[in-house]
Amino acid sequence: MDETLRHRHAKFHYQSLAELRADIAEMALEIPLSAGRSLFAAPLTVAGRTIPNRLVIHPMEGFDATPDGAPGPLASRRYQRYAAGGAGLVWAEATAILPEARSNPGQFWLHAGNVDAYARLVRDLRETAAKEHGHRPLLLLQLTHSGRYSKPAGKPTPLLAHHSPVLDPAMNLAPGVEPVSDDYLAALPAHFAESAKLAAQAGFDGVDLKCCHRYLLSELLASHTRPGRYGGSFENRTRLLREALAAVRAAAPGLLLTVRMNAYDAIPHPYGFGMATDGSLAGDLSEPLELIRQLRQLGVELVNISIGNPYFQAHYGRPYDLPLRGLTSPAEHPLAGIERFVKITRAIQLEFPDLPIVGTGYSWLRQFLPDVAAGMLERGWASLIGIGRQAFAYPDLPRDLLAHGAIRPEKCCVACSGCTQLMRDGVATGCVIRDSAHYSLRKR
Image (cartoon, rainbow, N blue to C red; front, side):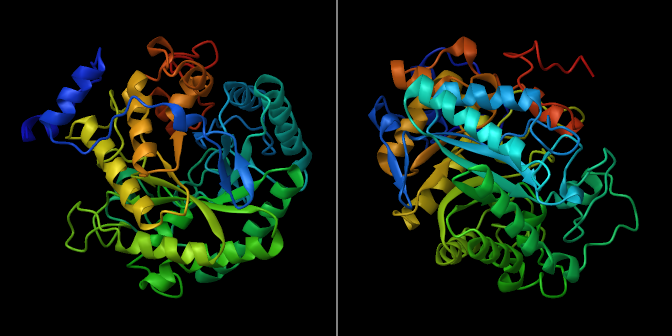
């Protein structure tokens, strides 16, 4: 195994599958490859609902809502492109449950005053999918509280679960900011439940309680140092997620319950979740696996696995070709980061073989994404394949893959991190390379 290559960042340079296979072998990485394509078109039944194929559009935020939180014109355009693109599951982006929970003024925020706008989005998406593909995609809405990343009026107003010597300096946290109170947290399940009822009214098939990337529910999972009912023990750190899920189930029993969760924060214990307790960057899945066991008991039927934090790049797990402004590239080959996604997803799917798990983290692979995705499906290491940044660049990827068994290199995401930089800047977000007529870093 070439340890030097494994621990050196590299840009995508592969012209053939043989070249990719050679680097995987040289670094002794456990990344599956397969030429099979049949499983992509296989339907999957989840809690009595049929997903027409195994391809998922991930909840990628466009930050293009109107001031009152309704989907704006660019958002409507994105979701129409996703519908026309043919994915079997469209996982609609993070939608705030309260005005102060928005990460910026352009984040989705669902409330009684704009539920009709979300119903139009759902109706239009389904009509387009039926016209273009003759199928009915499953539609999920991700509900969120942005926590430490709250910025509803364009100015940071962090609502912390705990202080972190890793994240506080990275976000230039102002002195004197105190974590939210237990009373504040105790009131949130009712707001998640109300948002879920509105999502059902708008026509979504289910909701996801966002528990990844260090937004509030995710940060609570890592609140080892927090005192009180929501910190310290595993029971306390998972309390709000469990209470919110129970409230949603009671308020909207017909909705499919899902969670997108971090299984590895890449932030050392005691400030990260899914981490070894020795203070290293080694992972430990014992708590994530126990949490999923409890989520199943609460009625969760689908889990979407993520790792790391897009706001903080001095971590492992999320491959980039170019660093974000002001940050450095990770000190590892991007394929090592993909292997981390693969191994964590594999471990969870094999532990829960009858629970559909969404595999993620393949966009860096460009035209070779289908080869790894097919390997995951064939081995039973994932049940569905999520397309995140790649969907910004290539919303019709599912159509091309299902029709031709391959995707087109000239349409692929190039992992430039431009969309992530737009997200960090809190402006309308999309692909600055493949969709430059609508999105550009220079326009700012």
